[in-house]
Image (tube, rainbow, N blue to C red; front, side):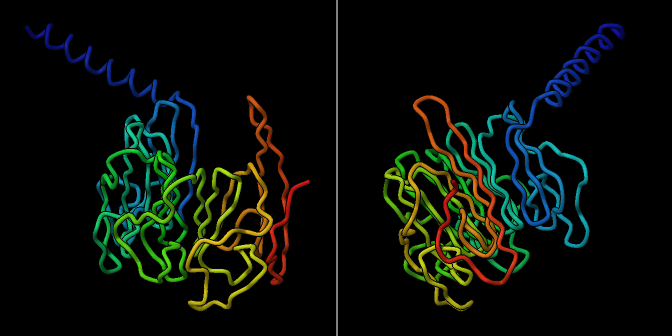
Length: 290
């Protein structure tokens, strides 16, 4: 009887160790950096996190308002994760069934779960935010979240102090709000501005524009005078991907780095250009790669 029990325990231990070895051997396929935490996704669909966890943004069920963090990768979700997005102090991920999940800081409603509160309003475990049909996600370095659905609609939630939600107001929202009904194919979130790309190749922008990051030929001083609703960027190139940082989008803004993608019939062909403007003179018009 004792021998049988030992054999069973040995078999179970071998199974656990085998799974651990398989998981550790999986290549990393995607990374995302928040203000002071990091997420990465492995080929087996597992989500890993490390760094600061003051608001529960790692999603491991723990928090510490003074000094909790981890300096080693920690597996948060074992499988089925398809995309990740790290916000300032919160995290989101997309699963293979099209569901959207989030954890961490939620003072401005950026998790979209219908709640918000004081500075310590947060969740330290993954929480399902949308049940299905989500295809892409973006988390701002501040407190704004965007996602796309399979019908091409654009949805937003969270902070809106500079009109970055694009709904025509400056009001925060703690529930997903549809901004565009169809034909959106890519999204990007900066600290206080947002961008999206439509299927016709047009680039649309909204939010803060103090450094010309919207690329519409204007500036607005750092007040609430910003783009409330989506507008097209005058020289948006067709067939490109978009990305933004705190103060720059694509090749526009105070500091700019751009990666442009031009699609062939079967495989993507990538062209890369880096543009650096190390002064306080902002660029208010999109630059193109050559």
